[in-house]
Amino acid sequence: MVTAAKTDIRGGSEADLRAQLAEARAALADEVRKSETLARVTQAVASSSDVGSCVQAVIDGGREIIGAAYGAFFYNVVDADGEFYALYRLSGAPYEAFASFPTPRKTEVFAPTFDGVGVVRSDDITQDPRYGRNAPRRGMPPGHLPVRSYLAIPVTTPQGAVLGGLFFGDPEPGRFTVRDEALLVGLGAQVTVTIESIRINAAALDELDQRRRAEERLKFALDSGRMGSWDLDVATRAYEASDLCKANYGRRPDQSFTFADLIATIHPEDRPRIMAAIESAIRDGADYDVEYRVILPADGELRWLHARGRAAQTADDGGVRRLAGVSLDITERKRAEERQKLLVNELNHRVKNSLATVQSIAAQTLRSNASPEFFREAFEARLIALSHTHDLLTRESWEGASLREVFDGELHAMAGEDRVTFDYASDLRLNPKAAVALGMGIHELATNAVKYGAWSVPDGRVIVSWRLEPNLLRLTWAERGGPTVKTPTRRGFGARLLERGLAAELSGGVELTYDASGLVCHMALPLRALEP
Image (cartoon, one colour):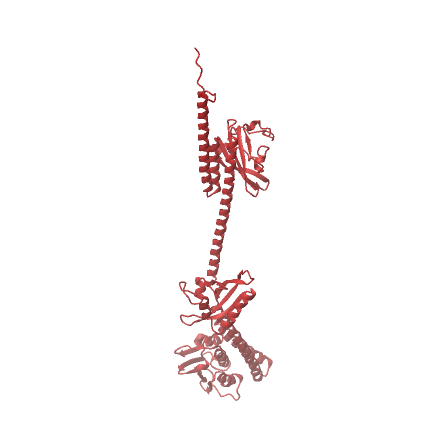
């Protein structure tokens, strides 16, 4: 007896229905797995902070979604020889698997992906008509990972630039479906967006880092140059100043400093000029470059500042919106310029006086000496004496010289240390005019002593002594041990220089005494004419 198999109302067997149901459930479970994996991978890609981790998440996840044995991302690189593609990330195989192979070339199989033309999916790439068309290998090189099922997806920006390609392979044929292709195309689009976002963020961070470094360098330069930075909002008059800028106006870093505070600190005589310069810079967009005085609020000290700036932004109506610049304390420079001006004026005065002195020396020497030989000798000696004092003053920046230094300079070449004795309680600082006048007088006394007085014989000596009294210098030059002295019948240049020229130059009195034991010169000179 034959029993008929059970059938359902649609005519299929119960076993077939169970098989179909199991197949549907498996397909649904696989689809759910793929969707869940895709969602997880998409989230991992979107949260990636660098290109490497982003690409690795894609090829690992893509391989898991479609069940591929291998996954790779070839990154687009351009060198001097043109375009080529370098392996960037690998999944499912060690990197050594590609270490011995050359860089992939744009073969007929790879070209659609590398050119961004479209997806290449093959159940068996070795049977594809494009496979093995390129010399010299004519296909996969020996030792290459076994690949039959093949899926390649270009990774292309919206602008059409090819970043690289996603490649998946498996040793078994027919592994990748149309659904797998669609899922990975969407994943490829996601990785493109993420890579571009990472690049933009990296570029932005790099720009911020460069700006930070530039600001640090600028701050270092400003601080090194003792320059303070400032910024003025034209409309609101809001004023921002760096710590060093505040210090230029006598403010501490923790003190507020407004535009009104700045103007109030400027010297009243300079304020109109500064306000006019600011208004000109705002109105015309001209550079702001001014020097002015400020009065520090703490102690009333007067300082000089140099402020420079320019329009930093232009408003919609064409006017200036902001002024920004730097300020520099130039007080020391101004003081140096003032000193230089005084020195130049003083130098001009001294040059005129020196020329007048030389002219007087020449005229008086010419009257005192009949022959040209005597004139040349005396004139040169007196010019040398004048130059000695000038050398001394030059070493002292023409600020003055001590009385003892003037004596030492004039007597050094005429007498040894054992032939002159000094007697004084304290030295005296002379101004340049007094140093030159006394230097010439000492030279005449020393010259006379060498020719006719104490230093004309081996045992003669000179005693120089001075005493400081209230408002007066009393100086004595006394010669001893020389030839017997007689009062001269006529006054020579030296005597006239001492008794008339030196006395008049220093508003004092000079007296020559021709004592039998030696010449004595008494000087009584007011300190106001001698001291700096």
